[in-house]
Image 1: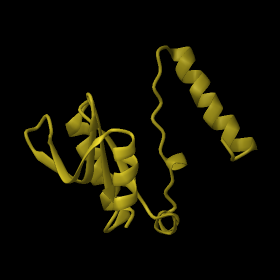
Image 2 (image 1 turned 90 degrees about the vertical axis):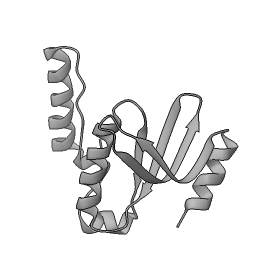
Image 3 (image 1 turned 45 degrees about the horizontal axis):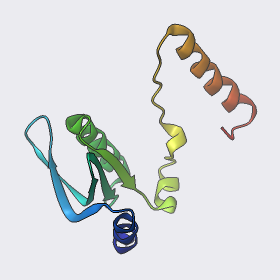
Length: 120
């Protein structure tokens, strides 16, 4: 795995790195990650997908909700495995909006971008 590679890069950027680190969620549950990196108030958690990819995605989503604003979560997936499940960042979107017109603009971008170019 690329644990050493990620660890070294984070340390170069002055992050404190903990392998098999943990963070307590709002629920009181402790969540374990392959790598936990902290710099000042920013915490980034990294997990390598190990088992069933769909199960991993659901688990990470639940943990992200429980951790609220405490940390960012990065799920690291082998590209071949992601293709098996036809999963990519383009398959899941979070639309954050400030008004109905803002939401409508984002919706249009998805509709027309996907319809004409597939490259957005």
